[in-house]
Image 1 (tube, rainbow, N blue to C red):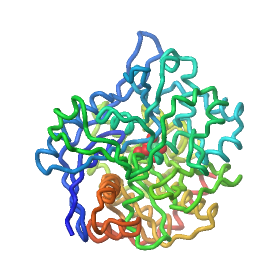
Image 2: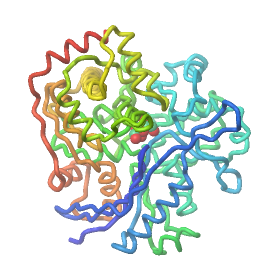
Image 3: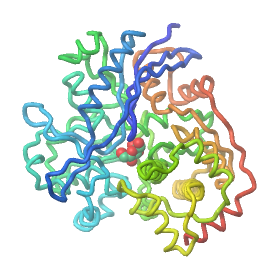
Length: 491
Ligand code: LFR
C-alpha cells in the first residue's frame, strides 16, 4: 500500500504554517515548510473608530509562498486549509473582496450580544444552533454590521478558510464544521438556519452552499497556479475550523476522553454523537460545534493562553523580561494558589494591558495582586487549570458521560507546568500532545479523501496518531485540595 503526501495550511491567531505530511499504513510524518506571523492591524480614520483587522492578503501571499516550497520539495497531491472560526470576508457581485476582514476581538460588537439575545430570544437561538453565546460569533458580528455600506454591497460571505480556498480555486462554499461556529446554522439539520438568519435582519442569500470535510473543491487555478508551480494541486475541504481538525487528531484509544485544544484559546470538552441543547446546557453556555464525520464537539471556550500571550506582549513593550521558557521556569517555583481569576472574565477579551486587568480582578476578589512576573504567570496557569476542571466536569454532567483521561493537544501541550497543574486539578491522567494536532487532523482528512491506506474512520486515524507522534503522560499529583480551596475563592 502506498503512502500519500498532502499539505496542510493551518492559520492560528498568532502564526500560520504550511506543513507537509506523508501518510500511510503505520506512517505519519510531517515537515514544517513555512511559518509566518499573523499580526492583526488597527486601521483608523483619524477618529476613535479604529477597527482591528486581519491581514488576509498578507496571509494569502505567505500561503502561496509556502505552497510553492511544499511543491518544490515533495509534490503534495492536495492541500487543505484550516483557521480560527467565526470571521469572514464579503464578496461583491463580481466576486471581489469588499473591504478587509475584521478581527473578532474588534470592539464593534460591544453590547450587541445582549440586544440579539433579547430581540431574537436566547432559547430560540440556542435550541436551533446549539452554539454558546459569545460576542465573537458571526451572528453577533453581522448584526453589529447590519447597516454598513459594506454589508449592503455584499453578495456573498465566506469564512476565512473558505475565502482562501476560493482565491485558490474560484469555488465558493461553506465548510460545515466552521459554518457551525457562526451561530447561523441549524445544528440538528446541518443546514443554514434560514428563519433565524432572516429574523436577525441578515440576508440569507449571502450564505453559500455547505460542504463537508473530505470534499474535493477544485484544482488551483488562475494566478495561484503559476505562483504555486503545480497545475494539478487539488484543494480539499478539511475540518476547516482548526478546533475540528485538532479533535480529529486526539490520540485516544477509547471514547471515554475529554480534550483541551490548547492554543490562543482553550477549547475544553467532549466528543458526542449528538448535540445537547438542554436548558441546563444553555445556562452553562456550552457549545455544540460540528465535528468531522457527523460528530458533535461539545465544549466551552476558555480564554486560554491569550492571557499569557498578551501579558508577555505588554512586558516586552515595557522593556521587561519576556522570554517565555524563563518565565515558566520561574512560575514553576512560585508560591502555589496565591491568587486565581476566572479566565473568562469579558474584560480579558480585547487586546490590552493584561497584567493590569488581572491585577484588578485579583483586587476585586480580595486576593493578593501578583507583584512579580512569576506570580502573574503562576496565577494565569492555575486559573486555566481550574477552568479546565470546572468545564470538563460540567461537560460530563450535562451530557451524562464519563471520562478516564484528558488529552491536551496543540501548542499548549508543550507547557509542562500547565499540563501538570491540569492533571492535579482534574484528578485524572493528562496525555499531552501532539503539538501540531490541528495540522495532523487536516492532513488525515485529506489522506482519507485520497483513498490512503490506514486512514479510515476516526478510531483508525487516532490510532495512527497515537502510534506515530510523541506524547507525554502526567499522572495527577497531590495538589487537588489546593485547587478546591482556590475554586471557593471564585465563588
Ligand atoms: C481556536 C478558535 C476557537 C474559536 C476561536 C475564534 O483557534 O478557532 O475554536 O472559538 O478560535 O475563532
